Length: 135
Image (cartoon, rainbow, N blue to C red; front, side):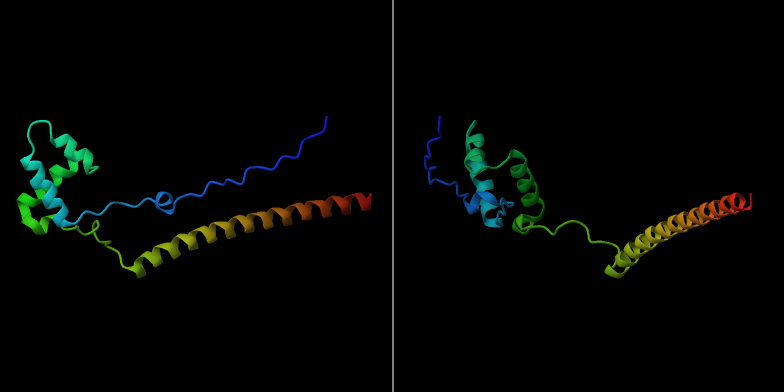
């Protein structure tokens, strides 16, 4: 039986650029304030629907409320990322170079040990060869 040459469909999946790369959502202070105000106006059972509609978590809302109570509108602005590094770039580079230096010294010791072993093996081989030649 021979195969029938059928053309493959021309359809190809083309990924959407928006779906390919996901990024963190960034909320403005105004948006956070509006959500807090809407949440305060919610009746029993409406809060979950508000959070679901905004794709938010209850934890986010409680953090926003806490920051708003403590610092007002300025507390809702984006905060600085984590603590600053205590070491300078030069210090980081020194640590990196020290690690590299240690690694290279270890490799050198290993190569020296291999070379010494080869030298001893060659000396033994030559001494055995001289003994067999003398006999």
